[in-house]
Length: 298
Image 1 (cartoon, rainbow, N blue to C red):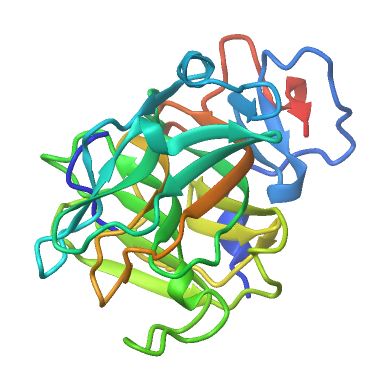
Image 2: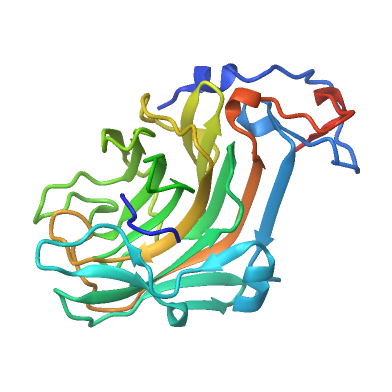
């Protein structure tokens, strides 16, 4: 997906990261960073975890490091002029999760409101996980993705997009195969991209599942419930980028379809990010006085 405003398996990619002594013990003080034992022992110096059982208001969400899209366009414009627009009214908190809603019954060919949040920090690399339950109501795109902080100059984007009209079965109208849609866009702003679609092994609308972007030295690897899935090999991001979560519809029959007839509600239980703000050319970005041996194993 290209946004117009700010706002199985390829384990060898992660093997490019520095190896770690598997006998390392977990530490109480994690000021020297983190070794991610479930992601081939990649190292990152910083972390951000937001649990929506405790973050339960827009102000708390902002204090946790997120910006709320209020009026910006999401995604591309449909042939009939329809476009998705963020609204804080469509962001809620219920039963221990964040809700990102596209209200049902909106008209095609005009602004169609949805919901979007973006980190205020631009990252240079990391492992970014959203734990979420998808809506099966047809007509929206539910996403976690990275997007360049300088969209006027660069085109970096790494997408996990879940098209509700083709979660488990092909879209009968446009033929989109079912599954998890993964796309990398060229950093040079050429619009070049590479995409794969990976079938779901379960029904993602029936339970909470982990969706992970592994933006690491050597390439981008995507994961579903901690398992590496078939990912694009080209166009990994290189420029500072925000992490964005959203639920939107433009009414475009070739992509989002919709808008939905009923409310589409993406439920997010938590996000967990391990990251560095420096470019991956500076990987590993150890804090002063730190080594990987001093990091916490998580």
